[in-house]
Amino acid sequence: MTTTEAASVELRDLLLSRIRDVPDYPQPGVTFKDITPLLADPVAFNALVDALAGLCRRHAATKVVGLEARGFILAAPAAARAHLGFVPVRKAGKLPGETLGKTYDLEYGTAEIEVQTDAFAPDDRVLVIDDVLATGGTAEAALDLVRRAGATIAGVAVLLELEFLDGRARLAPALGGAPLEALITV
Image 1 (cartoon, rainbow, N blue to C red):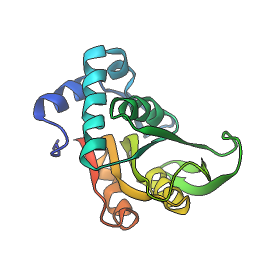
Image 2 (spheres, one colour):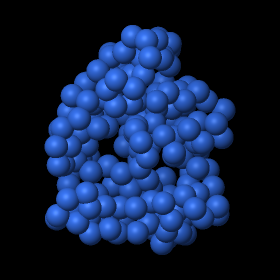
Image 3 (spheres, rainbow, N blue to C red):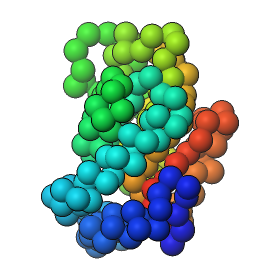
Image 4 (tube, helix red, strand yellow):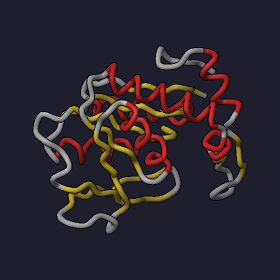
């Protein structure tokens, strides 16, 4: 395991100790990273929110995007703590009004996400937050939506990066030089 500048060894150890592996979920051969024990622990959850809010400030974000669904749980309190607006990127058909959509591949299927067309101002710098970076498909699709909606990418931040799935390499072109911060890499 490694850690980035985004997380101290103590923070990484605290967070990792509250993440549980669930084998063969949602299908055989997949090990699901369950963050619900982390969310239930007020010390660990607040430490995570503080770290993510710090990344919002460090990358001069003006808005924070959370990816459905677990990304909402992390991004909304981080945005609030950093005194920034929160924008949900949701599954297709869940947002009212005009939306932009993007279909993408998951590690075990396909999905489509959307953002409202008026979610960003032209001068917004957006930090995209999610729980896990696996293959990078969801984050890549979100970056495309943010740009199509007229904003600039400040970066991507995730709680946990599954390095063996090489999502970082997939995201590199979509990031266009913006940083990818993983609090924990396994």
